[in-house]
Image 1 (cartoon, rainbow, N blue to C red):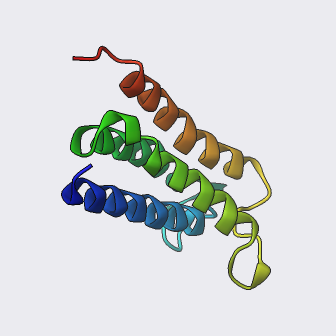
Image 2: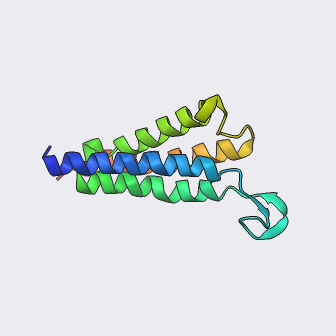
Length: 126
């Protein structure tokens, strides 16, 4: 691996870590009129939608920019940071809320990324 590839991989890992932390902090958003529009105070996991879009994009970027055999790094960083910060957050608090939105976030971030990773690793070799 070249120095450029190593820096790109580190940058993608940092991006995955930052996205994981931001998605955890925005997970409890509700449609209550404070940040999102008022639509009956319904929980709305917009962070799960962001995770479902960005995690596969990070895996694709790692496969294209670095090499396909290292495209697991952004997904692994995202999962580790999500679980570590979520279960032992700042001050020992649980940032990963204890309801269905946590499952949606983990599934929406990990499953599409894993599918893309499988496609990149199992794809046709040239």
